[in-house]
Every structure is written in structure tokens, then in C-alpha cells.
Image (cartoon, rainbow, N blue to C red; front, side):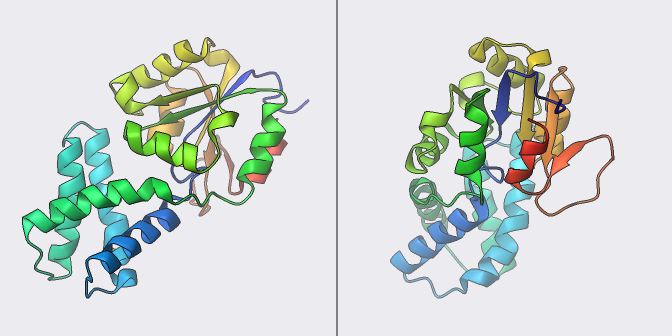
Length: 230
């Protein structure tokens, strides 16, 4: 018997787990930079943006900054690092347009539909995401993922963000299931894995880049490898 074969409900993170955030994000920035005729090399911008975005999302997750501060300062800091003078009104506009364009791109990780088709035969599938409501629902809809998931819990709906146990409790109640019947699958050790484990759920770390981690954590580096657990 496979390890989690007896479970009934599987909860997925969205960004960096099913939805290819970095690829779609790059396409969104490429679109708005072309629109505004920005004389800036996209690859150089992304070199700074990716770690800066991670830093500000951590602050946002920890309730240290607001949604608007996240959107503004991640761009402001990158332009400062690149010594690009961009006035505040344009930064606010780019921030707004980035959020509008981002859900329009729909690249998913390899094997997403195949693994969801495989799992939906025997499990109820759900999403728990820290992203903004309109953006996340747009991503799910435009990527043709909507039909796979019984419930979608986002931080705007729950009022808190992963790894706060309250968002997992909210999602479990919404899905009408229990921690013991559920598994969380996501790319963030802090937000997805430790957050789920803290309330008694099992968890599988989507460790795309095979980052060394403790041996007690269940993990896969490709979505297809989830079949070994279910």
C-alpha cells in the first residue's frame, strides 16, 4: 500500500507548485516593458527581481508590510539596485499593470494536468494559496485548472496567510475534512510544509531544485513523482 493511499483530500499550493510563476512573471514584465518602451534588459531586471520579490513576500507573509507596500517596494528596490531613475507614479502604474497582466499567462509545470487527472479519480483536490484573490482566481481560470478543485482557499478569504494555522483550519473546514485525512503539497518549507505539519496534516515538499533538507520531509522534484505516494 502506498504511503498516503488512505487519504481523502489533497491540498495544493498554486505558485511555484502547479503554476509556473517565474515563467509567467517574466512574460508579464516583458509585455509591460515593451508597452512603455522601457530601455531595460529583462534578464538583468529579473536577476534582481526574483530574490527581491521573495524577500518582500516573506515580509508580507509575516504581516510586516501591506499588500500595497509589497507591490510598490519590490519594484522600487529593483530599480534602485539597477540605478534606474523611475518616478513613483510610473512605479505604481507598472505595479498595477503587472498584476493585471500576470494572470493572463498560463504556463504550468510539466505534468500538471497528468497528475491532476490521475489524482482526481480517488481524491478530493483543493488549493491553498497566499496570493491575492482576483489574481489567483484569474490564474486558475486562465490555466484551465478550475474544474479540478473542489475548494480554493486564498489568504484574502481566510484573513491570514500560510504558515498561520488558521488558514489551514479554514481550508479544512471549507473542504469538510480533517487534518488526518489530508495532505498538503507545496514548494515552500516554511509556508506549506511546516505550516501543514503544525496542525497535524501530512505534507509533501515540491523540491524543484533539490535543495538539501531534512530526511524526514517527504519530497518530490517532479509532479509525476507524486504517484509514488498515492
